[in-house]
Image (cartoon, rainbow, N blue to C red):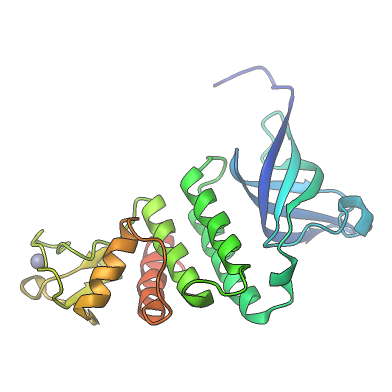
Length: 241
Ligand SMILES: [Zn+2]
């Protein structure tokens, strides 16, 4: 759309802080995943000079409510006001939760397109954080992280196929082990050259259900292999590590 210099537009949306970068003497540029606008970058003026300016709530892992101003076609929005909508303070005091939460938000930041609302990514990330804040998270922190990773792959259209060979389309019989190449998108049968990673039958069945969104949680036992699949698949799609 080509309009004469658009006026200022205000947005009020739920948001998660994905990154903070100091700029100048006292400002921050924040990257937010917002519910209504997707991933946006915004200038938070004086955020470092005065804790009171934003009430000290510009922390990751809490659900925030942000008032953002969009000015004409400027790339950067302006963060006018932010408050806590759902605090998850218990996570900030737990090193394991911080590690897993930081990893998750890094994936979300890399996988979210700019300025495009992605309800599936938003919902998966909020569920992940809510579950992580439970006293006994199902599957433990790594199980939750793996489950979020599989949900992100699904939301981005990169779901791993753990049931059908990505090369020839042949279906692997239920309960049978299979070789998986996450960079190629899933299972690779022997005739198509196989792959390095081998998934035992029952693990493959469980993870296949999670990968297509039928089952939400990954168990603590399946978490290490699931995380390896997710990290390799995300790396292939996002060009990271
Ligand atoms: Zn094949």
